[in-house]
Image 1 (cartoon, rainbow, N blue to C red):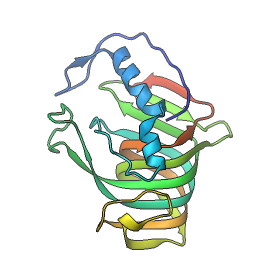
Image 2 (tube, helix red, strand yellow):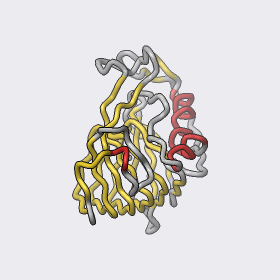
Image 3 (cartoon, rainbow, N blue to C red):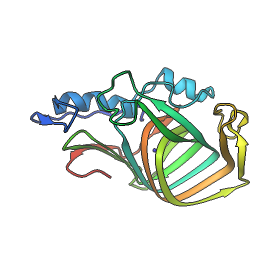
Length: 216
């Protein structure tokens, strides 16, 4: 499932090695680069709200995990796409710089007990929100996933349509791409392995950002 309007965090930590192919990075600097990807608004979110495909930016190639107890949404779409990294990205591995993803778009969403984590190489940046009785809310939410699990139910679902003509969430895929859309989605035990996420609005009550040896 990557995002808030405002959040702040600071950490004083030693250098760490990020693992094969990524060299050494300063954790504090990496965290400061990663946090805006989670909490900043701007032009990309505006594009999403106008119906432009979710990941128009170059992805970092570092996947992140999102889990939630429950996700309820009005206006749901899902279809295939390709996310692209920058040329010669150090994170491309054997992918050739492209990742096949399923784009999930939801017009309005409520998310209970949200956890998001990204492995920075030996340590995880972890964000928790919506776990104190008030759910996370989002508008024009999209996530680009290569793995999604949970127990889901839909109302008025349409499967096999052309994604370029979808209207339920206000996001259109490319012509000829297989997809599905529904009036509503209700999913419990949500687990996503994502490469990108955008939202026009994203409110995270009881936000907590920390570093941990374990992710979500």
